[in-house]
Figure (cartoon, helix red, strand yellow):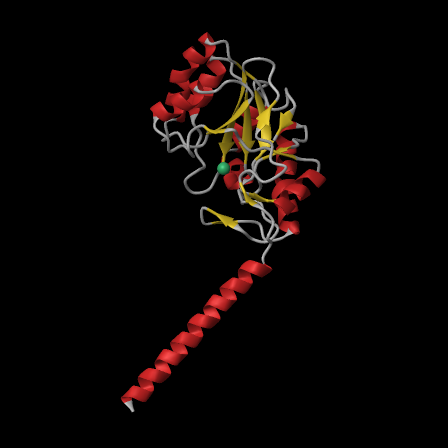
Length: 254
Ligand SMILES: [Zn+2]
């Protein structure tokens, strides 16, 4: 009897396991099989420079750990007159409307779209870093369009530059963004590793640039070393003759 029960249990377990494997296999095959990631076709990761030019971009992501303002960093950009493109999400905007207005009014900065809810951009709900992506074409349109409308209220112009939360995309979502008249902007250099890189790594990354790179930084994580790294790399970058541009200043390219 005991043997029989054990046999039965094993069979149930085996069948269950098989069903589980089959269902995960079918989930994989029935899901969107287009490319997914940070550099799928259509993502613009560089620009065409006139000499030694770099485009600094700063994301403002929002959320529980990402809704702060790196004041030291913004002060540094202003003091040194360094133009920068700021990708602002609807989540960050909600908590920082005054600051966002102030930045939008400063010609040194170009405001761009970092998504309404800071979602990876997918037509089928793919995730990145455990952050749930948009689940349908409609959600993609809302993620882009509703934040674009919020930002237009701030700046008086419509931004056509978009970078998703986590900078992850599937190809269909990129096509949708393009159909809405947006350019999807990635990066050449992950400048601050999501505001986790130590100062030295940030400096080394910047000093390895040759021109035409889009650098991804964060302006919402003052606890990181973004400010310190940029501050310490700037004198040498200037000595080497580098200039900084806004993403609207030059043609972007893959
Ligand atoms: Zn972000």
